[in-house]
Image 1 (cartoon, rainbow, N blue to C red):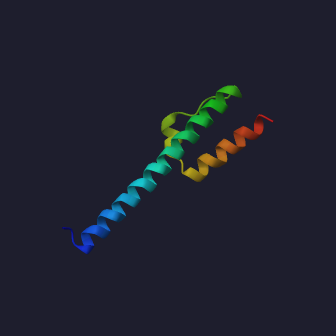
Image 2: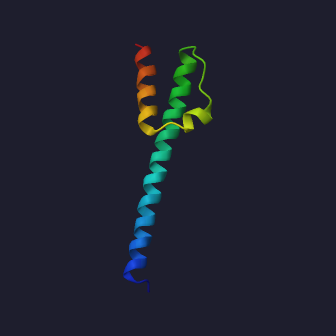
Length: 71
């Protein structure tokens, strides 16, 4: 039976893993959206490695900017 400290560590690890997975998934979706929008707009596509180095906030801003060009 795990002690209290081990249980807290396991819980913290699980929560951190889930948050990291969700953020990574969101970043991957945004990167795909950005590349698709660039193709639709006949713009050069950003390499995946460059998109992977951006923060979630930066990706959201870039995706919103590209989406606004469609209108």
